Amino acid sequence: MLSDEDLLGAARGGDEAAFTALYRRRQGAVYRFALHMSGHAAVSEDVTQEVFLALLEGGGRFDPSRGSLLSFLYGIARNLMLRRVEKKPTQDTEEVATDEDVLDDLTRRETIEAVRSAVLSLPAQYREAVVLCDLENTSYEDAAAALDCPVGTVRSRLSRGRAMLAQKLSAKAVRSMP
Amino acid sequence: MREDKVLQALQALAENDRDRQASFAVEARLLSNFRSRRASQRWRWVAAAAVAAGVVLAVLLSTNRASKPVVSVAPAPTQVPRQEAAPVVAVAAPAPRKAARKMARPQAREVVTDFFPLMDPAPPFERGQMLRVQLPAAAMRTVGLPVREDHLADPIQADVLVGEEGMPRAIRFVRFDVP
Image 1 (cartoon, each protein chain N blue to C red):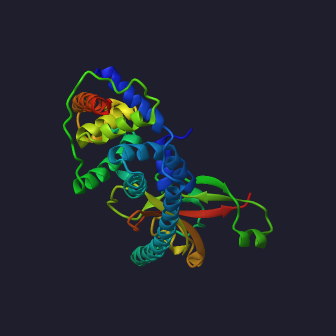
Image 2: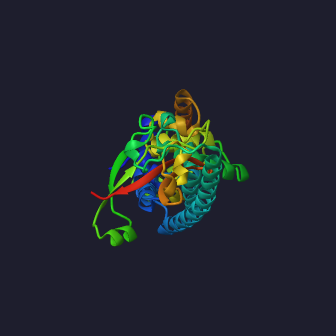
Image 3: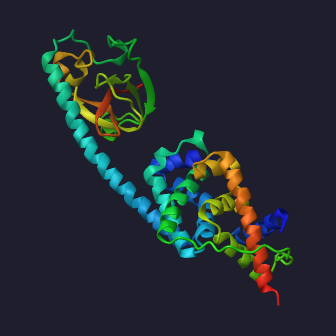
């Protein structure tokens, strides 16, 4: 199987099949990253499209020594998302922690949506770390390349993001109690 | 709430969304855009090729006017004076259709010289395109290759390496040898 880098090189040389293969291989991850960052399918589709257009235009800027192509794509998506977030900032509501557990039945649709909602309410810098590392299983190194920060920063943001999520989910549990 | 519960919650969300992806419409729009770009790039190359061919001709002909005639020898790449600097590479290739018909021979060997730089000093070369052009044989003299006086006007084929910016960087000459 051709590597992402090989496919990118061929695509930039005009090989449509290579571009299609690269798109199909990586669009899901880019789309989900945008979805978990924005909460909107339409926005995520726009961002996915813009990411791959940017790849065609600026794919020459990709440097394999700085991270994988996927992290490069995440980086483009992140910049696009930040521009949108700046226009429409997320409301970060403070929650009160309790010992209640909202996660007893994770198969329930409402619970999944509660987790999604909690992730969306995180400040962007913590949300992107949680989305990349916990939802997309990106390595700390690739996440650092995508977020343009040191690995240690990724770890600390992730830790802080998880702690905030714990608070938010606990509070939701309290509110949903009869 | 403990961190392991949070991770469990996130894992459930990730699992739930695992198959979510952009609709086919996004792929269709991107492919349409890709094809448009490729078509416009092709036109840019054609324009660049036309400019490059013109520049090559101008450079070669102006240099030719200033250079002294060299000893007349048939343009055989194996006899070129710059043999060490420009080793000859033989590549099997189908003969041009007209030549093949005229000579009634099925195959010809494409013999090419090494590349001769057209820019001195040459800027770094990253990407470019090779263009096959037809030039008068006199063009070979400009890089030191011998051509007989009575063959100066003969058409010959050459490959011009054009940089991404559209400037011709190097040239090599082609001859078709029939075995």
